[in-house]
Length: 159
Image 1 (cartoon, one colour):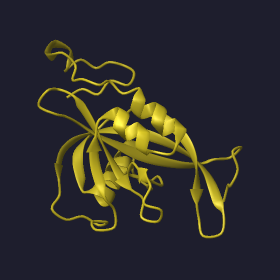
Image 2: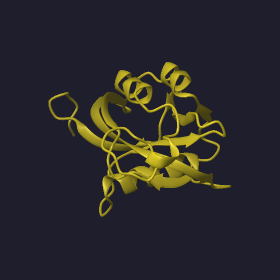
Image 3: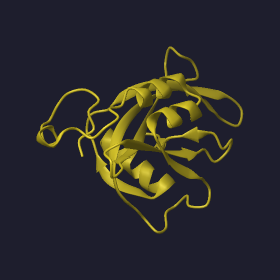
Image 4: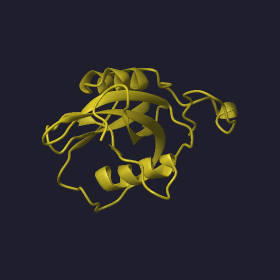
């Protein structure tokens, strides 16, 4: 198993997002099970699943979140994953997931806490600098009505 920056392990993550009634963006952070740090739902790629679908499954298992996942990542970051006897260097692709609803029950319910936060609040709570940058670079408000349905490259998050 790789444990150095020259050969990172691959992970996928979902960044659940939603807009409030005023059109302001909120992101969901959850706590890790071990250290209770604020993170986003993430995990290892899944055999037979595209990365964006695996990210959506992680959001469902870790936070009970169901939504529309984007096929293109909004960014990539790296971090050192704590293991029992070592650390693994991981490269994480982050896929936006437009919140639709939360399940009444899910696999890791009770093992994590979650909070919907404005991007600046969320960025202040996460420890990974690359994830901070991804969150801070998200668009803050819902695109104007005429632009919502157009496909656009970059970090756009249509409603």
